Image (cartoon, rainbow, N blue to C red; front, side, top):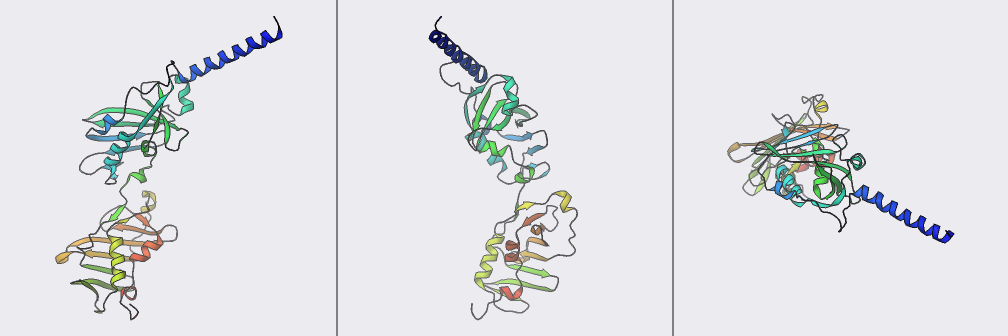
Length: 306
């Protein structure tokens, strides 16, 4: 056998070995990439009872009802909408592997992945394991529990299953309709006064001084949708002492109806800790936002310059 023929045979053999290895990895059957025989959009149409996202180091339990909760805490108002949208818009890619030996490398084992289970009508309707990230930023590997086949999935579902408990919780501190607010009481350790609506203008009590309308408008704008930067962990919230407040705001509506009461603690680490009076959740807001809310009387009064 000539050297040329020997080299040719070795080359052909090498190609065959590579092809065989590739087939073992991807589970290819020929005829182009195999697509997933299922979709996630059907789950989005269900009347969801709850969703559980479990991993080796934590478990997220989202429970439905009139108001959704996450691990016993109040969940964000858009929780159910976010879940359904993520399921409806999830794009399943081609088959990556049928070989269970590849599960660990792709991150789709029960130990390495994040298990998403959707419940409706009291029973589990869909159970997936979302694993390691794919080449695109919003892409990951996915398989159904009980099935060795692994596919790619792309969309917001990937980031959704990786959220922490804090990211699911309701971060809305107060949402006061600016047209309903008639009175805001400011209480500080060394000063107390009120901002009162009088027809179309605002005045300060007890001084009777006119308030700066632009400053008041900015204050009301913040209070119409004040959201937290984060929510303090229970271990931190339990150490806070609320007797020494930086300030307190009490909002009243028509005929003196209570709209909200906010308590503020200043912190070098986070800016301000805030909570609603009578509620356990402790939020954080920036020093800038806290300063915009905790106005002193001189900062609200109308000056000669306007």
